[in-house]
Image 1 (cartoon, rainbow over the protein chains, first blue to last red):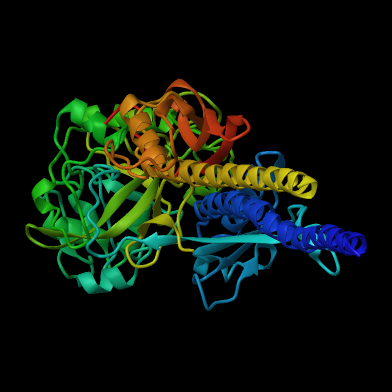
Image 2 (cartoon, rainbow over the protein chains, first blue to last red):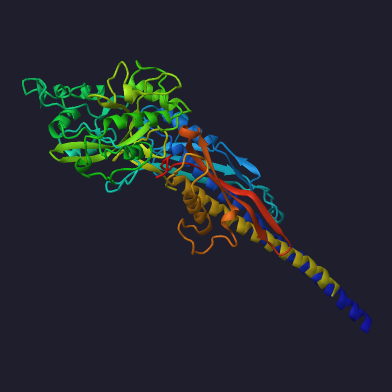
Length: 432
Length: 143
């Protein structure tokens, strides 16, 4: 009687272990799936997130308000490559979209951004989906799936400096004079271009002032005193001459009325080594913010020392020439420069935009970039600021101004322009 | 007893290897985050020399960012166990040379770091690596 009972018990024990093992195996494989497959997915997610973050920043750095800029932004993001799946596979060609805001607005592919839309595009969204293999989870799935899509997305945008943001370095020792409607508020409201035209040529340092010249005055020349243009020993740059038409805001009148012989728009010391550090490196005489009165820092400067250093900065650029030559328009020169992939941004100099609105009061109202000029049309050595060229008098000696092409908003680290809004200056940030 | 011996043998192997994979993935994930922090930080810093070899101060700040998540933190907690500055390698991408040199990107990667495990270890060479486009100010002659 004992034999069958023992046999029964032994059979029962063996069966129990096998059955328990079988049931446990499913749970075990599920748990391993969570540990291994999920861990793998998390890593893939992090790797692709780092990639889209970098691609979104690369794209946002190229937006400059034009469709050409949008195309360059698209190229910058899609040509960036990185690796995923433990550095074993390559990530390329993400989806790149553009919008006016980081959320709540329509996202456009580069091809759908029209000329009218381009100046409003300030944010870029980069999306990439990859499908890593999963190994353990499919074993316990009723309908096995062997890959899992992982989507990563990043939004970067050009974020303008707030009104109270202090700029400790990066601005050149010259100023752009805004075309204002008689008040600082009017200037701020016209940002990002402060009444100037992208591609026109403006004074970054004004010509020698002489109040004794015939018909010098701050009127409009129509019986209301002398004309401002007559107060200079040399003609100011063409963009400022165009604005001096008696029909509205006029930088030249502001300069004549409030700067006179005291200053010419240069702010900095007269030491050559200091000027080197202002123009070639990123030092400033003082920190600036919007609303700062820059008047105490303005001085007549050191013209001869400055010219050669400005040319040195031009010659640090991969594109230190204008293919359209001296006769090309400012806008043509700017467009050619930005479109040439060999340019490295050294010819673009950020400057404070100022509004001389009273004696001893010149207010910083924003920031902008100016394209430094050159007098060569192919690779070589430019000496525009030392010698000038046939069309524009702009030289280190004598009474001439320093001219530069207005290039729009300044974005720190961008080798192109920016879109700009309230302050005309900003930096690229990851928004999401 | 035989079933227990067989079963536990399999179970221990499964548990150990699961732990091994999980730990490896955990460490690798921390490293991805660390190099991402470092590269993003480096790309936004002022770059103050006109060669692709950054200055010591710049390199130190970026490496500290990778190690501690803080560019100044020498006494903070390490983000990843046993990670040292010699494991962090930095490459600065650029265009031009000499006077026309301009930095264009910053890549941070991990080299020579060993992830330990119960049954063995794995040495990482050149990975994970993260590249950001340069978006800081540039002063070629130092500042």
